[in-house]
Structures are given as C-alpha cells and as structure tokens.
Image (cartoon, rainbow, N blue to C red; front, side):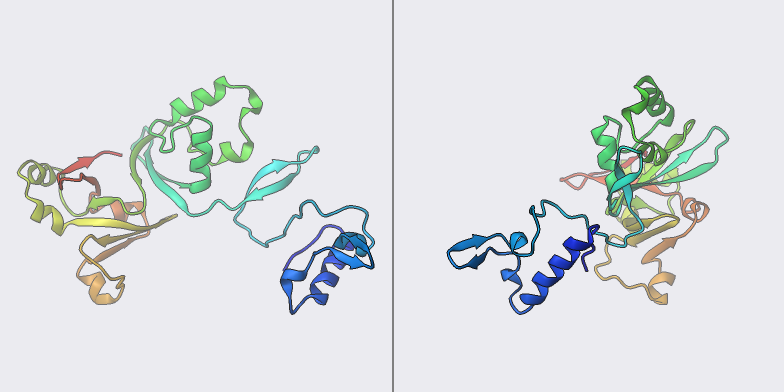
Length: 248
C-alpha cells in the first residue's frame, strides 16, 4: 500500500488505479481527448507531474540519512543484515560485543575508517581531528566506544575451531594434522546480537534437532562467556588447502 503526503495526489492515484485495475500497466499513461493528448495528471486536474513520491513502509529498524532545514530526520535507509560482530576487550580484560550492520560497514568505508576496527582510540582520534559536522550523529552513535582493543571478529561463513587449546591448534597446524582440526572446525552460519550459530564444516543440512545438538554438529551461543569457554580461533584455508590461525 502506498501512502502520500498530499491528499490530492493520493486521490488522483487511487482513481487511476481503480480505473485500470484489470490493466495495471495502463495506469498513468497519456490520455487522448479528441485530437489533444493530455498527461494523466492534467486529466485529473493537477498542474504538474509527480516527480517523486515518498513511501511509508512501516519499518522500525531504519537509520536516518537525511535531514530537513530544521534538523528533522526525513530520509531513512534499511541497514540490512549484520556485516560482522566484533568482540572488544577493555583495559580490565572485560569483553564487549559490538554489532556492525552492512550499511554501517559501507559508511565506515566511505569515511576512510576501517570496516573492522582494531583499535577504537585510533578511530576516535581521527574523528576528533575533523570538523564537527564531518560525521552524522547516527554514524557516530554506532561506532564502538573508545579504549577498546579488538579481540575477535566474526563474519558469516568464516571458519573457527571450537574446543581446541592454543597449544593443540599450534601443533596440529605445524604438523599438518588436518584430521584433528577438521573434527573441531565450524562455519559461522548466523550472527546477531548475543546469538551466534556455528555449524560443523562437514554438515550439508541445516538440522537443529536434539541429536544434532548433542553430537555437536552445531553450536548456538547466546552469551560471550559460553562462546569463549570453547576457545574460538579463526581459521583461514587457502586455495591449496593450507590452514593457518588468525587473530581478530
């Protein structure tokens, strides 16, 4: 359903749709009156065409991207799915989750800020060096706070080992014991705030029943403490099948 800010435009559009309900492609076509050809809006008594319309979608999870002369938000964008989740560590060793949407990842790239921020102080120092109006408030509000260091980042389809100690993983990689790594290797299937789903890399079906859960074919983590109990380590596999562990 379309909504219009001007009542006369709404009524004219409703009339056009009602008259051409069986032939929607005929709506808004020129109207022939004798030898004279009229635009559809002239036939409806309007003085000018509709150049653009603003639709009210009813979406709640939107981000403002445009303001009017009085500073009110008038343009919005749907941020889309999550690009990544970053786990930051403060000076006291406490872990903090930060969710970055696809839209905010694009905005970071546009402003020359790393998409995955490793040191938040470096980013905020750069921002404070710029003129005050360089960044919108909505953009700044979605950045991680200062005094944090990246501990781990997760993106969909990245690979992690779960349940291996640092020493066991190091030895397995150096000795190319890929069978041992394979038993603990999981793919990031879904990420959301305090909700991370890892599925074993050999699984070809999305089976979430009790048997799959008890046999560790997938993990659903809903807290950072539960995730880090299994010591997650990011794994990169190159085109030749070589494996190495990554930090961050």
